[in-house]
Length: 243
Image (spheres, rainbow, N blue to C red):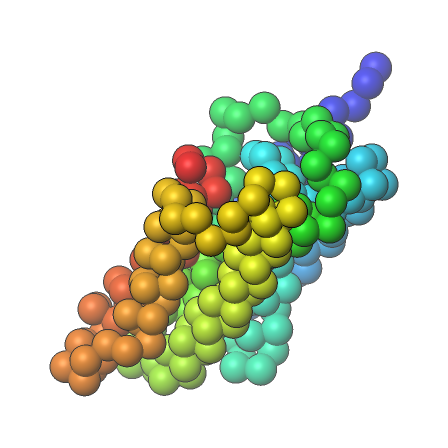
């Protein structure tokens, strides 16, 4: 009997995310932390499986993209809560974001991508990999922005953390686009030819910058701040999974 490792790993991670959400909802921080560690460990096992199976990092596709993103989100959540303390609202939204990524891939075929010749190119690897890293950062930032809508405690910590996360995501996305431009230059000619891809990339940067430069009136409005903070994460998920 052949074991379908990608599907198994995907389902285990989904189950752990559901348990995370439940324990975060009832504010069982220690049990939540256990499931978070298990999620990270399972994602790392999946990433190693990809690396040893095809000799490259995760780049594209339902299985590779989803477990890579939720694995990085788990590490970011662990580091943030270690520095800021247990934040039940953030844990709740981080688990919800994880489940959202996993559920939109629920009916997709789980498996590794065909090893196209272009995946051996360094710039192609950086382009796809850093785009997934960016998505993990931006969805993590969305969790931070949404969390402070639940109460008055730690709102500045969450907002500042979200702002820093979005800025870090913007830097990662710049690296991805820079690698993509070199890939385009080496293979297709003009690296700066305007296209739908560059247009969407510009929208993403504008959404991030809009969050960081809200007018004072909107900055003091928690709802406006929280909603605008989620838009970059939602937009990049659409780019990756529905583009």
